Image (tube, rainbow, N blue to C red; front, side, top):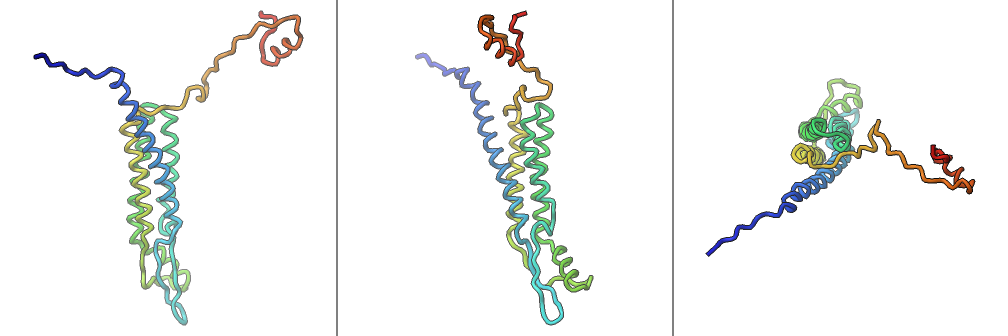
Length: 212
């Protein structure tokens, strides 16, 4: 009894990397763009709140993410720029940009987690409000928005890791859009000397109507 061994079709083997490249590209674009949007949104929300003691009672104070730290918002913009730049470079340049994308996401995660327990921004507001440089905030509480920003950073980090792993399979910017690329010259069409309008059209196109 003879056994027949199935041989993979060469075309299917060649198409597998292309499919992986398309899928990873779609996931990276989605994660990078969504992560940057989430991080930017989270930094505009209230991260901490408390009260400062003033004459006659207490004053409620709040601090947004941008008051606590500007790192997540700045790195989210860097991550977006790196996500776009991945398609403008090739080979080693793509690896460098992908690494920058991943580091941006990691930086957002770290800064957001540190900011989740930070109270210096509210203490500074308390000092400004009361006029006492040693004033601090009482009844301090934190919201969940720093962790939302960390999730956004994690998505950007994932996009960077995908770019490092599969970036070589992704398409690059077309050469015709690069500086210095020569455009193919159009071949001049024959012009009927008996028709003046064709001569004028040829001149408008920058062609020599004489065919010389």
